[in-house]
Amino acid sequence: MRQEKIQQIRYALVQEMEKLLSIADNTISKLKNTDGQFADPFDQAAIETNKFVELACRDRERQLILDIKTTILLIDRGLFGICDHCGTIIAEKRLVLAPLSRMCMPCQEIMEMGSKQKSVRLSMPGISYSHA
Image (spheres, rainbow, N blue to C red):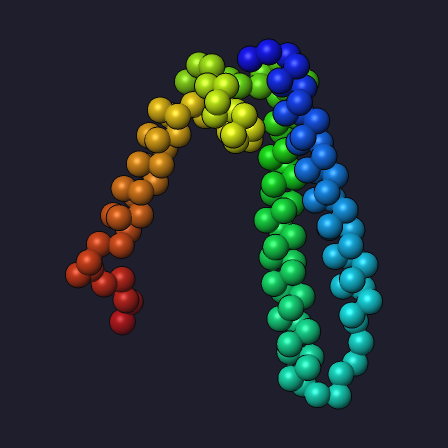
């Protein structure tokens, strides 16, 4: 992959990370401002539920930020576009569409098939896991 294209991807990742960090900062300040006493326990429950959902979303974004930082580090070290599993070069088209990809398509498919087979084995019909 050309160095200019890699730098464009890096720039886009940095922009996305900054956007996510800004959202996280806004969430923190918003959560601090919503603390208080509520006369109605249903209002309190609704606020607490909203906080829980908000924090769950931010946790997913936190993981995304970590993935972006890892990808930026790989770019900076010259290791971007190398499959973590087999060491081959990941297709440029895949990296442009999904720059956080860490595996080539064949390795990704093998991993997903393994995960799918594992979940099928865990949810076999007719088998009960109750401990009576």
